[in-house]
Length: 433
Image (cartoon, rainbow, N blue to C red):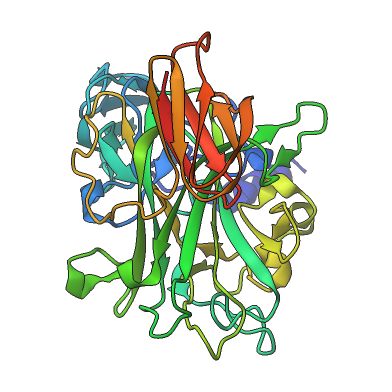
């Protein structure tokens, strides 16, 4: 009996799997949909980046002063760890996980982690970079967990409904992306919207409008509001003849593609605005008259999990139908298959001067409403109709009507600061009091 028992123990030991000794760590948590962030040990503080050259081949962007966590996932019985963290404080550690702070703007290599095992040492240093501060073009996927199956295309909603743009037959008037900002010390200077190709036909005077909204989280329900009239931060339009291609010197992510560049007249201060929604609207629905098609980011063969399908926070791309004022229709409901539109914010840290390195953008063509202030009186010029003035926090400060192209109103007693005026057509301008 004793011999049999010994044999069973030896047999079990012989069949136990051998775990390979590997040094590896998890990438920092990038910002993604807030309803499904699994790791709460440290707040995510990074945004994914596009391949625009201004990003200097970096994978993640984070503001100056961010604290970032690199989590060890080494296997095979590690006994000790050491880290060399380029550009970070501290620059070296001997802990299992590396929690570091990036205090200086620059583009840095991901850390090198050396792990000690019983039989020797192994080092892991991924070929990735993190950009700290400076200017950056954020990736459209920065609110969603990164998956390595991304492809670029013009994903059809269906063979019947066509693609978004001039061939759209679903009466979709606007689409947009929900973004989480990685901190408060950020300015938004503009937006690039990427297209499958440069349009060849459109109605005379056609403009596409990009609008930035401040989204709000309801703490009681966990829901997020994208309602269009709520807290408009900035808006700008571009005529289709201003669309650029590689031949014009612009960066585009695919061969034959194009970019619709918007640069705001004044930078948008994102302090206190962690959740923003950027929409694109203005195209028609008659494919015989226009052929503008928005480029989509497609994850082939990815099926949305049932628990995500009904969780509004698990989506980051939404549509608005004709006659609607909200963007609460996830594009995946139309067969977008986890699709996300190429709407990419251009941001910079507070330490970086305006227009420093921001390329690939055009002058905002929506300056049809202007406001100047002198001696406590604001003079507003623009198209006739109603207008509203908002404080920088989004509160309504004043409402009125433009008549014969101009009007004036009293600003005496207003708090000093920046205000935003929005006309009936959605055009905006900023002015200081």
